[in-house]
Length: 296
Image (cartoon, rainbow, N blue to C red; front, side, top):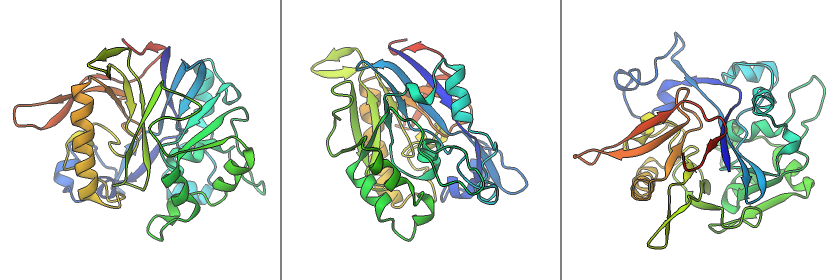
């Protein structure tokens, strides 16, 4: 099996919102801001093939579904569907994808499911041959959002996914589409039912898998957020997220599971470290994956 990091449309968002209660004097060292206080963010997907005999895409980024005024409001940089170009560069098309795994249905993670915006055209679902995998709690949230995060969802998307006849809603650690090859972890601090997908590693130690890769989604958007106290203003429950993140990182370090970052503009993959004071960090940082073996 090989892994590719697949870049989608990039985004600029307010640095204060992305770093919650951390002061700008701290976060600006990690993410320099422009004159509008916005920082650069990636929307990076992970492609694995063959995984359980299938070509699997973990998330789709923000895509190009927004009309021009909303694209500007939400800081989407490119007007073309970058994810489709990146898939082509890796030798794939959206028609080749057998499974799309969605950590949740916020537009910056699921918007790439849709065709680029065209004047007067209704939203159109891409990936005609894919099964779409989403957690039960994340699905429920998308269908009935809370007023606090309603603007983060695409109103038309749940109906399009359901009408496809290829939607799998997951309420356990494994899915029918991917079997034992992918193990799901769940978090509620950012949004209910955030699903963190671990591609199970090849090693077994005391019955536990080691050496895999986990898609960190918005539990840990990038390297700075590996530091446990750093959360986002977008998180619904920062204290819960911190507790979930600590447990998550302890487990991944113990089993040598590497972290895959969706929003870090300079790093796709890294190994978890922990210093003598117990602070988590990263090492062996990889900016991009190009047909990388899982065990590399």
